[in-house]
Length: 70
Image (cartoon, rainbow, N blue to C red):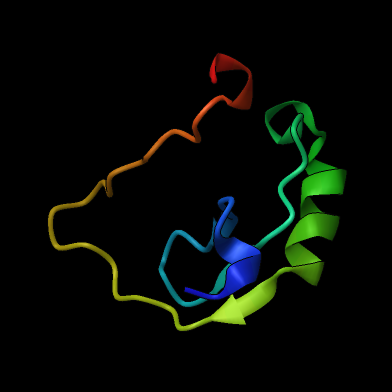
């Protein structure tokens, strides 16, 4: 695994699966950021290979571990 992703990452993905980007430095408050700020983060995120949409519809979402719980 690339060292920059060892502490987790944020993925931006188009609903149709044609574009996928990975951000290695995830802001702690990313869930509260406005759409404009998320769009900027998406713009600087590294493009990764897009995947085909799941044949079962929804894909699993894995919550980020809360650092304060350690």
